[in-house]
Length: 268
Image (cartoon, rainbow, N blue to C red; front, side):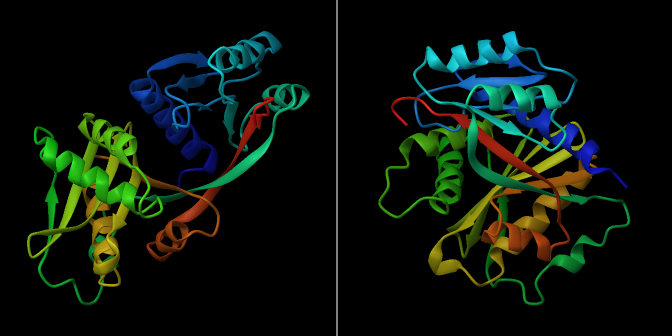
């Protein structure tokens, strides 16, 4: 059985590599990565940090300057395993808690009966179709279905759809469309990297909900992860949200909680 600290090393390193891949600008920081893109994008933070020992004051100051020159708030994701020097250094420089996130995980073993996780009645007319990464329409359909589940109706999702499509093009990404009688009902994707599979996003359009589609997407991605040699699957969720409840029903458990801290600026 993997320890929570071992899962953290796998998952946080995966997140750091993904940030370096997708962010317009990134730099090493405290054993992880700090990234930046346009204002108000999720790239503007540091992740995978403080897991390799002490972090010096000069390095923290350089991170603050990196974000200050780009006129965005410096944000850092901290696990319970971050070195005390990093935590103290951030506190001394005015960083405060912005939000929390739980990291849920489920080990994948050869004898794990994933079929038992399927709903008793599988959705009629359902097809889980792997997205063709050379097909831009499919990439955007998948991204739109996923991001639509996380933003209010009517909000402009153009930038987020483009980001989702870019993520789904990556070599380690395994996106799926959920079709009901040929119509897009939802989508889900998994990011596979160094024995860990992050079930990174899943959503079902409102009129197709409560049919077991999301559960089928979860099981499908677990199967793909195990087929590719992953030993653990992870899901990130804010505490108490539906994502967390759905994951718990499928045998995931909270292995550690992260605190996201930020340094207030005059404009925040």
